[in-house]
Length: 218
Image (tube, rainbow, N blue to C red):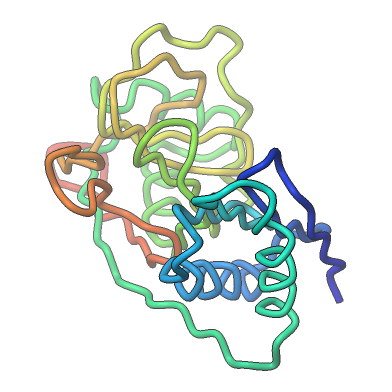
């Protein structure tokens, strides 16, 4: 069983942190607990991460000790925590200008570009958490055979919607940003829109499927 630590972070935050490894059942419990505590009157914001959950509080440390106990009670409770989950299909144009590193991933993995696309699109992914930049989703479930090291020289500007592989993970860049992941495709969907509520297309717990488009390698 995973060990859990509970601690204060500054004057207005409390943290639940689990020992490795990262598992989907633990992540699902974190998401469900985050959803439950998000409605607590003393909680300003919940931040679910990979093997951790942070609660940002309205008031300083005087109330943090009580919230720390509440966090521990919530995690150790036998109550069944079932997070909400959606199925989200992401259309992707693989290869070419949209995925300039597809050939490099194929070379590294010993596959053809078409095999890389087939393998990447056949997997069932789960959004583990959002981070790095608004709307950037870290996805669990990428096949191990697709793991490819990050680029030796990061790009100064990665286009919004770019689908990349970085080590053993895959993800989608929601905004233009510097980045070092291997880019294998791009989606036309907007992953982040500050004028919408919620502003992110994906959220923790979502099931994601990549759908190759005929304009690219498929």
